[in-house]
Structure formats: C-alpha cells, structure tokens
Length: 610
Image (cartoon, rainbow, N blue to C red; front, side, top):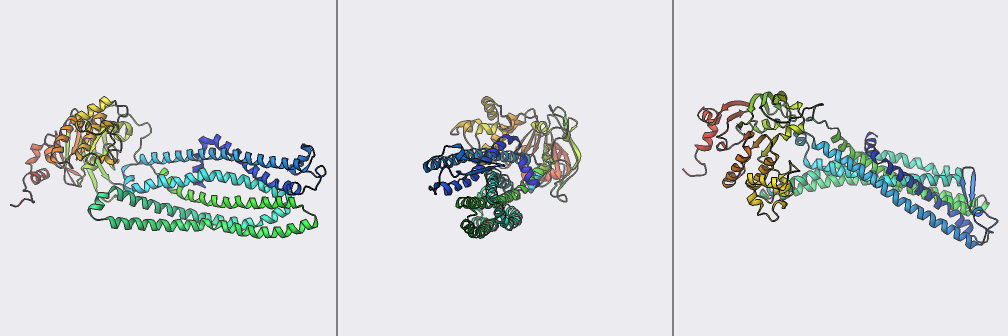
C-alpha cells in the first residue's frame, strides 16, 4: 500500500480534474443502471401493447420511500406514446452516458499522465544528482529501463486503468441498486458466488506483483544488452562478436518471454472463473424465474430487468479483477522506481552552503585519502597533500592507475574524500554549493562527450545565454571555426551521437571551445591530446594554449612533451606523491619521472629493425 499511496500523491496537484472525472464516471455508472431499468417497460409495455395505458403504470424508479411513474408525468395515450417515451429515454440515457464517459476519460487520463510525468521527472532529477559511484554500480540500460519501461507500467495503471476502475466501480454500485430493489433476497443469493472469485483473485494479484517485477528486471537486462551492443558496435564488428551478442540478446529475450507468459497465465485465470460461476448463477435464476412467472409472483419485465442487471454486473466485476491485476503489475514496477527515489545522495549541498563567487588564492589538497565506495579494499589515495596556486600550471604524471584522474575528480566533487579536505581559497569544498563550485571549473577530458545537437548548442552548453558572436569567438580561439564554417549548415549542423560526424581532433576543439566559453578560472585537462594524430595534436595544443592563458590549470598527460613548460610537475605512484619539481629538476633526478622520460624519448622503436 505504501507504493500505491506514493503514486497517488502525485495526483494531488490535479485534484480538481480528478474530482470532475469522478463525478462524470458516477453519471456513467448511473446510466448503466438506468439501462437495466429500461428493460422492464420494454417487456411489460412496448412488447405487451394489449395492456391499457391508463391502467398500468409505465415503470417505476424507486427513490428512497417514493416512486416516480412516467405515467403520472405524461398524459395517457396509445402504445405509440409509450414506445415514444421509452425510445426517447433510451436515447437520452445513452447520449448522457457517452458524453460523460468521453469527458471523464479525458480528465482522468490528463490526471494520470500528468502525475506520471511528474514522477518520471522526479526520478530523472534524482538519478541526475547521484554521484559517480552510483553510475558505476547501475548500468545505463537498467536505469533507462526503469525510467521508461517501469514508469510506463505505472502510467497505464494511473491513466487508462484508473479511468476504467472508476467506470466499473460506479457501474457495479448502480447495478447492485437495481438488482437489490427488484428482489433483494434473490440478489443476495445470486451474489454469493463473488467470494469464490474475489478471494483467489486477491491471492493471484500478489503473485502477479512478484512476476511483474521479474519481467521488468528481464526487460532491463534486455535493454542493457541492446545499449551495450549498439554503443560498442565497432568493437563488436572488429572482433567478430555479432554471433555472441546475438546469443546474449536471444537468451535475455527468452527470459523476458518466460516471465511475461507467466504473468499472462496468472492474469487470465480470473476471467474464466467469473464466467463459469456466472453461468451457474444464470442457470439457477432462469429456473427460479420461470417458476415465479408461472405462479404470478414476478412479471416477465421485472425478471428480465433483474437478469439484465445481473448480467451487466458480472462484466464490470470481471473487468475489476483484470484492473486489479494491472495495478499489481504497476506496483511491482514501482518498487524499483521508488528505490531510485529513496537512494541517498552522497554528494549534496550542506544546509546553508556558501557560494564561491570567485577564485583568487589557491587550491589545497590537505592530507586527503580516498577509496572508491564500491571497492573499499581496492585502489586508494593515501595521505596526499598538494597545493596549487592561482595562475599556476600543475602537471600530474605517473603510470596508468597511479591516481591522476581520481585526484582531479575530487576537486569538482564527483566523489568526496574519505579523509582530509580540499579547500578553495581556504574554504572546504564540502561547505560550498555544488553549482557555484562547478561553475568555477572547466574540464576537457580525453573522452570528449558531445551531444546529438548542433555545434552551436554543444559549444554553449555551459552558457545557454551566450550569443552567436560569443560562440564564434570561443570557436576561433579553439581553432574550430575553420572547420565549422565548412560544415553543411555551419554552427547549426547536427553533429551526430557523441559527435560521430566529426573527427577526433574536431571533437576535441569543440570541447575546448565549450570550456573557453564557460570561462572558468580553474581548468582541468585530462589527457586532452592522447587520442590524436600529430597534425590534430598540434592544432589542439595551440587551442589549449589559448584556453590555459590566465587560468589555474591542472593537466594530466602521458606525453611528457606537452607538460615541459608546467610550473610544477607532480609525479604520482600508487596513490601517493613521489616527486615534485620542474621538468629540468626531475628529468635528471633518477626517479620515476626520468624513467618515464627515457621510455618515451630514448628507447628505440620496437617496430623498427636494428
């Protein structure tokens, strides 16, 4: 019930529309009851014209202790007048039912779709605020499956099924009133079969919830295989993995099919149960009705009205059991959705967090230690202290896995330190608002991510209010304007997923232009030229020189030729600082830096014969 109430709370902002739809659905249910009541005058009057119009009351609608007779409302006349009144009544009832059902369906779907839209937005925002460790432990495919497929199940229940649930409940109430006022003793006997249907249905519903959760998990698994295969399609083709990926997809599809069929079997059993018990009831009623009509205790019209109401009653009961199962499926899907909503945000603003208005003095990594939350016994930074003065260019060097990228990821708080602290101008970054901290940091990484959008919007991603002239100026400084102007639509060219329509050097220069336009005083360069050919690297290095001017820069580079002019070179080894100094001081110091330098510049190329 907790999940159900949490879902329903999202409909609060739309309560007015929900109330209107409930009222309209109540009219729809009442119209169904009126339809059953109209059967009585059809049998007793329209199909029996020999009865005198002024001697027999047309038909009765019980209203508390009083009765309304159409014969009292209209002057007596021939059977044609009776037929006219009945025909008009039938048309009026169905017209009213149709109009109210149309309006109610729209309003309830508006409420359901709006509530689910808000829920999906909350889940998306919550996931977006999670730290890097969250995305390491939750695959993209599974996250996408929950945000789309799981919430789709909730959407079906809160829009289409909620409308149907209201319609069927009001229909049941109206038809119950008809059968009870016709012959309440007979009605109670006829309805004794319902417990034999509803109790097993409730038990099946609990199983359906578990099965639905399994089906959604298998759907997430299928999405994960699909996302990985499409994203890595070049690797799949290069290593001949098509057959392997096809097999993975087929196995995931079979698991999803198995759980889906299990759900269908569980969901479908309620309908034949209701129909069988309903048939038993109808057979018994027909025998009873025949005897009562023979004895004169019941008119054919009254019995026909009762039987019609009972037949109409079984249909909404059957629909309600199906709706119950669909709600169970939605509740099963909601479990994973609410798990994400309840996920604690490890990286968040403190109450009363300060705003970092500017950066003027220094960045200090003060005796910090760090372990990845998902691998507490794995890699760590240990008791590391590093000072970066404003305007200084500091290069981080070391073998792969030494901790360079981990160290720079702590500054914008992609992770938080395990112990120690990082300060900017003397203030612990955990006491600063995330927005103001990250606004002062620009990043250009080795794996440049561009959006499937225009060049213009990719460059101004960090400054949505930037003018075209400002974008052009940033592109010119990044040496990107020369190739952007040659694109089919210039700055309005869509560059494809992850910038697939551009070369590696072009993507990198777009990323540099994006950082230039952001104009942050602190700059992190993480292997920004490692994947480029010589010509592209020269262009990117020139663009980086423009970007680094008048900024505080922390640069990571495997190619030592790119960092010779750094103010300070810091050598990391297994999460600790082993050496610090300028290029001239370290190149002949006999340490790790000299060894790395010799490996790059002194050793012969192993592909060239001696």
